[in-house]
Amino acid sequence: MNYVENKIFLKTFYDQNGLSDKFAKDSIYLEKAFSDIYKIWLNNLNQIKVVNYLMIAEAPLWGKAKKYIYNPEINNSQFFYRSDLGDILNRHIPDKKDFIKVCNEIGLLVVDISPFPLNPYDTAINYRSLTTTQYRKLVSLTVPTFFEKKIKAIAEKKSANIKTFFRYARVKKNFENLISKVLIDNKIIKTLNDIGDISQNGGGIDKAKLGQIIRN
Image (cartoon, rainbow, N blue to C red; front, side, top):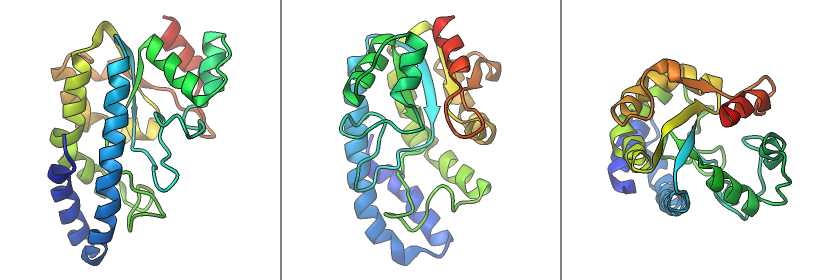
């Protein structure tokens, strides 16, 4: 997997939205971020013996702080607090490094639907500034060159009873029909009815939902 084949789609997207003059600068950041994030993600996948739980997210914020669920140097955020997992498993998780280790032990993996760590500080566009239609178009263009490739790698390590869920209900609503064929073709799910979500009002994780997924 590489940035170049995804870059083509993003360049066209910038051009169509009158942002051609911003692309060169943004692309320098995005290429380095893409490479760094993918290396971290792949290394983490290699630490997992069997993928039992697949959480579908959007994309890392990254930026100068390198905010990412699999960066052990960055504290957990509302995206997935370590206390959420600790409460569900009834164990103390002292830091981010241990959080990642515990996720790997139970076979919980996070995969993003978009290859681009767009954010308000490093790129001319970000996911909140896009309309739903624009966002869907960008994701749909990169499914074969990003999401599908990650799912194929995951499929090689999936358990027979893998459970798949979206982190956010709005992502499920807007994108599940775009990525469902990939998940079905790779035997991650059988039908769309197999995918739930673990979001709750206020933005945090619904621990009851996630607990039910992990315990059942």
